[in-house]
Every structure is written in structure tokens, then in C-alpha cells.
Length: 107
Image 1 (cartoon, rainbow, N blue to C red):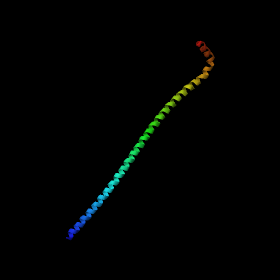
Image 2: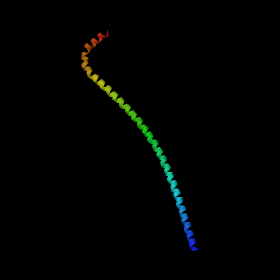
Image 3: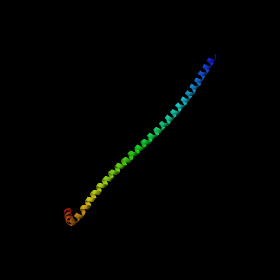
Image 4: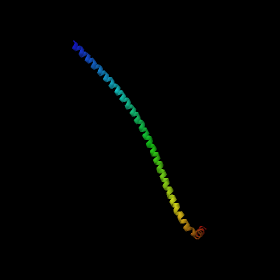
């Protein structure tokens, strides 16, 4: 009879330990699910920030491209003006001849 009581106490203790482990496992599962949800929310937030940063990068890349095109055009105009300015002093002495000749052609 004592052996049966001891066996019953051992089984009861095993059951309580199993229930404690089950409760702990359930709590661990809930904590893991909460952490997973938190990480998923953080991932969504980071993806939104990444998208906004990529959009901003595209915007500034386009602005940079436009600015570079304008700079190239301005440099080309400056080169053209510089070339004309360089030739002008050489042509000015010819102006009275050429200008007089051009004036006759217009009339």
C-alpha cells in the first residue's frame, strides 16, 4: 500500500512538474509571438523608411542630372562666348571695311 501511495505521489509530482513546464512553455511561446510581432512591425517601419529614402534618392539623382545638364550647357555657352571673344579683337580692325561693305549690301 505504501508503494502505491508513493507511486501516486510520484505521478502527482510528475503531473505538477509537467503542468509547470507546459505553463512555462506557453509563456515562452507568448513572449516569442510578441517579440515576433514587434520585429514584424519594426520590419514594416524600416521598409517604409527604405522606400522613402529610395524615393528621395531618386528625386535628388534626377535633380543632380538636371543640374549637370544645365552646367554642361552653360559651359558650352561659355566656351562659345570665349571663342567669339577671342576672335573679336582680331576682327575689330577689319570692321570699317567689312561693316561698310555689309551696309552697302543691306541697301
